[in-house]
Length: 219
Ligand code: SF4
Image 1: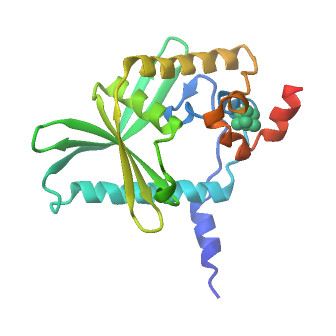
Image 2: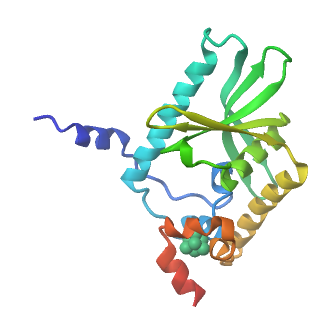
């Protein structure tokens, strides 16, 4: 008997290399800053189940690209996808990939689209703070100031989308988070347990693989 689960596990498995201090990604910056700090100082192998969730996200994203490219949707043009972006600061680098850039044919407006797969979009009532931060960063760096966060359901392809307006002060807050993260890491200084104290992100602690360590460090 062929074990297909095992074959999928083999295909998806890749050894995760510990992250390098000084190299950061926009997708990480909306998470609890202490948790991000732990991932650099006390790296763990990515859980294979989590890797499957990431893979499913890639599959859904590729599907969205096909939809946007399709001649069946002539009112939009897919201008670019997975465009790499990089900011080189004096002491550190931030690099990432913008998901999709589309142009509305009617008014020539460029829009950045950040795609997030979700297990049930009916429960998405507003865009997640971390996703907004990521998109704000991309809008800032790309100079394209129209954004959409697109949530797509992994079970039935239903979507929910939110228009996100660029706000310079919010983008600057995101940039400041990178600066602080770099400083905390290089000074070996443990950041505040952000998610324990901010109501709208308290849920992050429930899924945090460092919660025991964080509790000990709070003492
Ligand atoms: S347990 Fe909560 S506060 Fe502590 S690192 Fe994890 S997410 Fe942050």
